[in-house]
Image 1 (cartoon, rainbow, N blue to C red):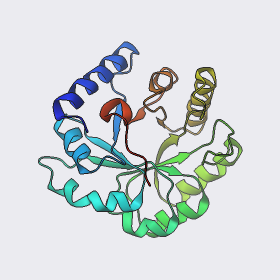
Image 2 (spheres, rainbow, N blue to C red):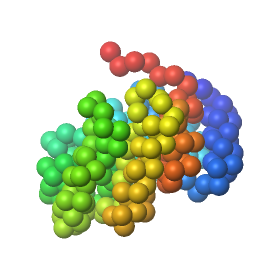
Image 3 (cartoon, rainbow, N blue to C red):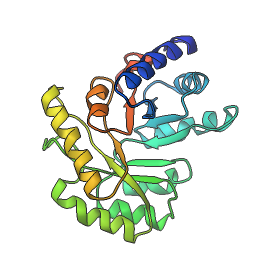
Image 4 (tube, one colour):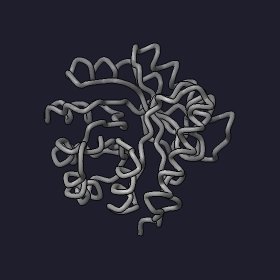
Length: 220
């Protein structure tokens, strides 16, 4: 786990890259999954106001640390697959849900009166290993989320597993087009290896872990 100073230097490099791309206002989400609470503390001290977590139990284990941070608590973005039966435990801790991909999850969030921002995850690469609704399913899910009263603000996607840059650009461009067509401002796309491509294609949020904190240990 790098020091606060190292995270600050790495974040400055990211900010410089975003400025070069003409998108200095892109929201950088520090993906702290798998790093323990030290990463949250370091991200907060480095000036990052947004963190991302993938697993319900891991986030719940970190909530005490989040509440004890000085000044303003970081915004928590849930960026992993959400089981509908976990919504009850998570709803008071999550500020933005990036992976809403089905009617049952929309309904679970509505039942719990979730007030956080909602982004619908779309599978824009067509890979069977990726979660997300299909582009064809998106209009109905957008309509359902709006009628349910959720704070729908945007869409989310992941690039291709093989890291192919042209395919990544196509996937990200597709999401931006879908978001614009649905009247949604936000696009959560791009991770450490491909965030530059995503920003060039219109990302408003990037999800960065390795580029800020280094390699994480595998869950086992």
